[in-house]
Image 1 (cartoon, rainbow, N blue to C red):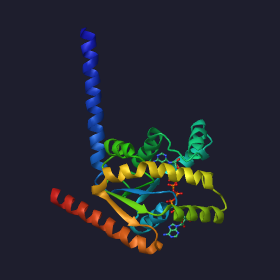
Image 2: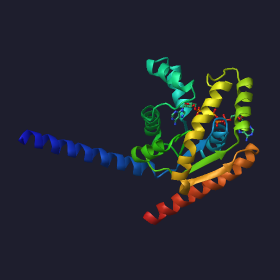
Image 3: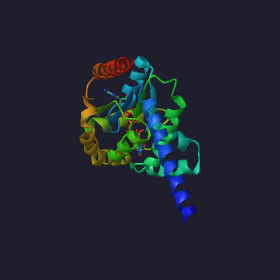
Image 4: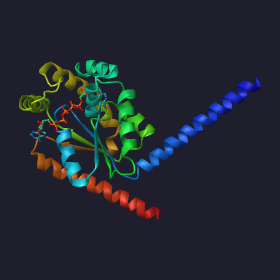
Length: 229
Ligand code: AP5
């Protein structure tokens, strides 16, 4: 009995430590902006992220790229991920979030801000991210019609020397369906921190709106930091 009580106390202490560590990590990560980049396949998430990186020097973490790196490693895990990705479905959040978390941890201390591209893709991903990593400051949702998204991906596939395995019409349709099923719930849950941007315009026009939103976040962070001094 005494032994069981001791074990339970140890477990409680371990949980409390873990929570304190999560909180500490969340607080230190939240000193710099964390921005989620949302939108359907081919809406232009990666294109806008490249421009944000150029202007603000943020760290760009694309969930799709992290997963493709794992696939490229040729590991057993990579093979399983590839199977899911080629059906247009979602990989388990444990996989995606641990890849993101590791990448964030590696860049913490040197990063000026994080762009989390292609995440969350369903609302529980967002909830888990904010518990395990840090609260997001802003979500940019690039809204685009399905026809435009399909056209853009097909054009990208035709132009690139190395074609992505999931850039074929059948998988694109499945990716769109996955997107359709999950996105409204994300937008509803994170309405207060989401800016919807019309992505059916010129890349630079879209970027002007992106800049306004990011500048606003940076200003708020600076004001908050100044108030804490
Ligand atoms: P991921 O790699 O994230 O792919 P995606 O969301 O389908 O998006 P893309 O990378 O294809 O497009 P993009 O929006 O970045 O557009 P881009 O800028 O390239 O995910 C792949 C798979 O990984 C998923 O299906 C899933 O299986 C898995 N996965 C990823 N994240 C996950 C998660 N969180 N949970 C579980 N599973 C996950 O632009 C496309 C083209 O359009 C380019 O050629 C570009 O030049 C052009 N373009 C861009 N903007 C414009 C514009 N304004 N006008 C004209 N052309 C434009």
